[in-house]
Image (cartoon, rainbow, N blue to C red; front, side, top):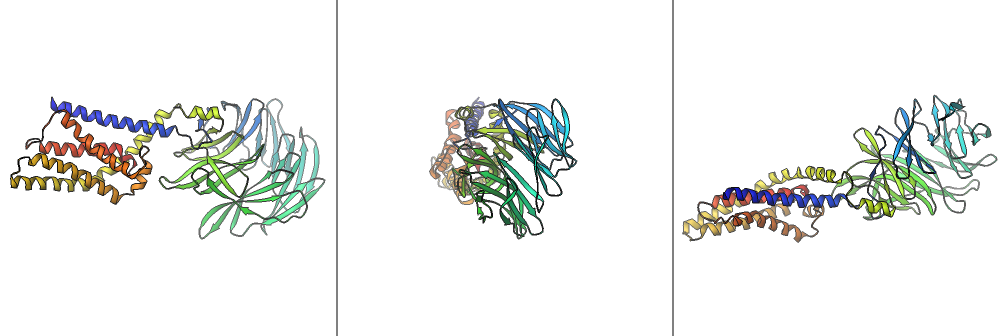
Length: 513
């Protein structure tokens, strides 16, 4: 009977500790990625091996295009990003640009610029086109012989045609301005033009021999000023780094360009952001807003990946995280100033998700959402695996504790002390506490453990946690009114030792390494 009570009390204590740990994990689960952004919302969009994400704002929502290596999936989404399939376009050149809204799609297929309308079907706009750029009312495409062709809506009549000296690398349409960047591959020379009545050269810039230009973007600033943003990969000593550089310009001819390297910091922690991937810019009402995926080194978790958003106002970009640690994200796009969509990697597939800075949306994710209970359970379960390392680690202090315990008992019995077993058991508890404290403090990075445990913040909190584990491991023995004697001494020693280890396995083990 007493044995059953002891087992029952032991299980009850362990279940209560596990329940507390699950509650703590759940509270961490519902924390936002930053104070300005909500947690991730899942959409009902299809999964796929998508490599690009593009959006067009509609009157009642968005048209979102997901491009994989074979086809284009066009989705119709409302403002809450409840999406349904609109159409699928196969056999397009997935390495070239594409543009889709509710009814029309433009893309490159077998070197031809194609327009598909849901009602009228497919037609060829240009039989020979390298690539194209499109806004709501203007379409620009360029050809192998360096011609730049401009079409106005409905894109059936040619408005103007220009010929550049070198192949066209990039075209950007901003309101009523069209910018063209050409590339001289041999000299790694790039030239920026503005199209008015002709191609007006604004300035040129070189790319170093050890640099690869990954992408170009042009941003509208205030008072007819603009900025060109370069995404570079810099190769050095067998490794590579990413640089994002920015140069401001206006519409005057023959300017001199000065590019400044941007530095990226996480706003709340001031940690440096590295490996900036897929930077895209949204033209906000108060200025440009940049979103990107990046890596940062967290002192607790090591290298982690998040999506970030920031106002692009100077050369130090202080960005707010819009995703949390635990998954890999890429290809973020701002749908508006309050909503950023991105792809979450799930094996070989990508899943469309989004975050919001809208106050209502932020409050919505501060409560438990669908999937949070399950996610917290799996997080706790995966963390508990670290507890097995604690068991291996504990062998050292358990052996030393047993040596002290039974050594003391031997000496007390030799001197024939009256309460030798009671004193030896107290020594056992003290030795257990001291040795595990020494082992954990000396052979682990204690500050890292404290930072990982969500419910303590100070060094003395950790020592208090070890003391609590000792106390909890003895309580069931005294509740069932066992007394320390020669017959029960081994039971007391073994029970408190392994009950203490079980408590530490749940309470500290998940955060040990």
